[in-house]
Image (cartoon, rainbow, N blue to C red; front, top):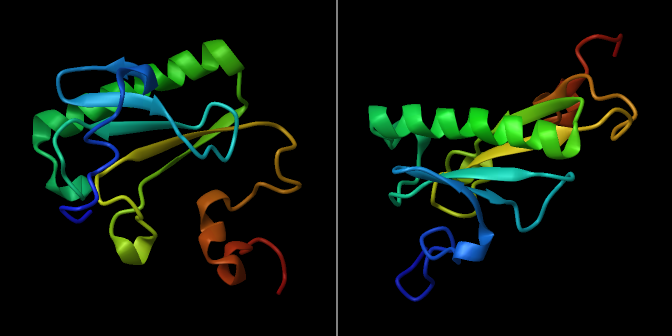
Length: 130
């Protein structure tokens, strides 16, 4: 983000926050791809998962576990996708690390096999003849 455009994750209103710890925040995604789509975000402005300090990383993973339990209780999804777009080439549009926790529901896609492999549709289906 440029100096003229503040980071949206560094200035989250308290009303968006559904969980927090010393090093991280949990919010619902503003543009969810499924019911309950959640983000786990470090408090410190850091762009890459690989630039986290060890204690930050551990705490974000603990928040991820807590967020999953909360989503289980509230929405009862049948599975999850967990993802990080790390860098512009990987599709990161907000240069502040955020971990997507995406609840998945039976029937939300005709054939969910391949999961995150569908970022490259021509390579996703490795189980059938091509």
